[in-house]
Image 1 (cartoon, rainbow, N blue to C red):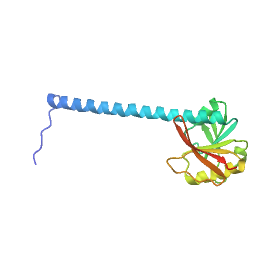
Image 2: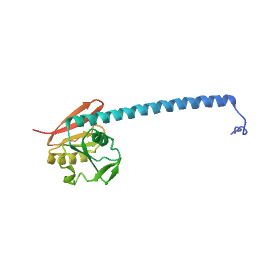
Image 3: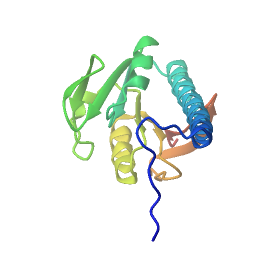
Image 4: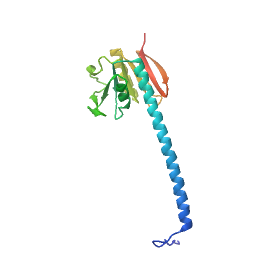
Length: 178
């Protein structure tokens, strides 16, 4: 096996250096393009969130409840700015972006948190959570908005379901059956 000798420190390999610079430049251009696409995707996501907030504000007033807020209070913040009273729930009580998150287990809900809510919504809830949200909303007489991860949408017995496209926002709206 033949070993190639490494250049001594300070030696320059002009041809190789030019090739390296060109490759590095191409990589940077690729990284920039990916970064631009990421920013566009984020802006699109922000627009979809804004469109959902505007839909909710147009059709509901007063108290609305988000189940499983996680670490993304953006929609609730927009709703607050649009004059609604969002209640945030999750497994841990805390402050999130200056908003209080109530500790709640949707499978054994604290009813007093949700009293007076005309709408219960959740972003990317798993099926079992959707079913629990349905039971809670049915007992309260509230509507439900779900934005599932993909096409994972529960059939909620007491509700009619329809897919809504409002601007860039796509979500399922559940209303009590007549």
